[in-house]
Image (cartoon, rainbow, N blue to C red; front, top):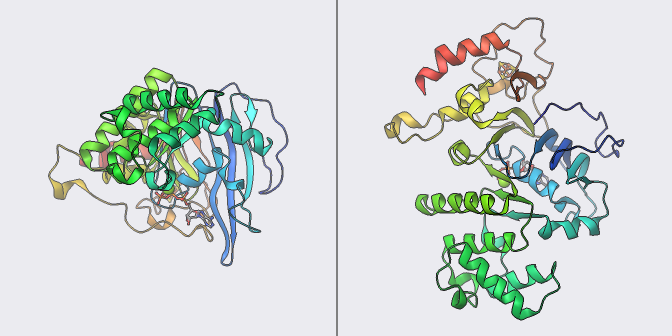
Length: 365
Ligand SMILES: Nc1ncnc2c1ncn2[C@@H]1O[C@H](COP(=O)(O)OP(=O)(O)OP(=O)(O)O)[C@@H](O)[C@H]1O
Ligand code: SF4
Ligand SMILES: [Mg+2]
């Protein structure tokens, strides 16, 4: 990931063409705003990142921070017509393997979806049709992009179910979704998402509905499949623990924006944003007593219609009153480099943050 200049385009306006990136996936200044009766909901408000093939990016943030809206945006699913007249306003650039998706023909994006990029949703029942067998759905997903016989596609479906650890796949292929357990449905959805060997896989909270043991198995499975297929993976979660071992890079989202991003080990060991400190403090740790473990980030996320001026984390930040040189509270902090490939958006000086982290936060974690 490298820092990007803002395109400067107003929301809803087409962005001016800028040079195609070299990264496999590059998101530039993505904005997704929803007009509602109460006002404009700025769900994603200027997000930029890069991801290479074979690498995993973890996007972390509380509920409502814009994680799912971001992933649906990458897959081109906000333009699917489900919003009627009130279409979301989308701007920025999303480059996948040299193609800019926001300005591409919707048919082209549809073709890329499933073949080059696929998504694993939080709730498999929302992605699996209740009236068709698991096999029929995997067969359909495969034949949409491959000109093969039903028999050959069925063989492929059985092979994929086997690959994701479904026992007796040649029999279970004819089951309906309700005949599968929650963990098995999640595996079936992974099989369906991977049937076309997509180069980009987005897993949106792939384990939240599952118990801890199955969660660990599903995460191991995603990791193994990534190694095998060499795809780029985005794992979206509100739980930093989920991406601790899985992600190469981490992007922390707050109120529709990135507040910190960088290599996973930097974000864990030398975090430079007070919100990331809060998330780390609320992370369950196996080596701690239960009551010591969970310190939630105090307060609740802001309204995305009236985002606080200046730093959006201001109302909840324990360091909002720390004196800062030459900055007005109403100025929004931009991402600045705090280390190699590591950025954070906070008005405190880097020295202030390093001191607070080392002396006050890290010893308590
Ligand atoms: N179609 C829509 N119209 C209006 N607001 C929307 C729409 N879709 C999403 N939002 C709002 O955008 C914000 C971000 O939603 P999003 O689903 O991306 O959150 P999230 O980070 O995925 O949260 P969670 O962890 O709960 O899944 C929320 O405040 C949500 O209410
Ligand atoms: S800019 Fe101020 S309010 Fe925002 S995170 Fe930094 S210290 Fe906290
Ligand atoms: Mg979500």
